[in-house]
Image (cartoon, rainbow, N blue to C red):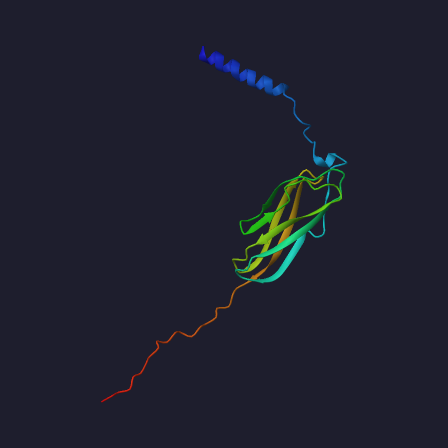
Length: 156
């Protein structure tokens, strides 16, 4: 009896799923001619040489050149050393805004990091890049502290 009930329940689930309404499989914001559209002043920023241990930031400026507001749902950096901040409110058509990216220059050497933007724009996934070289700090040698020797006159 349990097998019959389980089989009937399984069949019902698949039947309901088969008749469920779904969005068109290829429907994307790009299919909407009025969708918002990012135009960035730059998509790659080179910090050049930066000293180790010094966080640096850059603002990626953009304009919504579409006819509908852009809503940014997420901005994800390629590693934990990069922290993006983005507008949470919709960016209206013709308006500008910024995505602020901070890089923590902890390790010496070259870096090339990506920042992926997810939104309802014509291009729903947009990638920005930061790059540069973190210079190792040169160690500054400090004279060792010598004990302060006070001499007292010998009164013999």
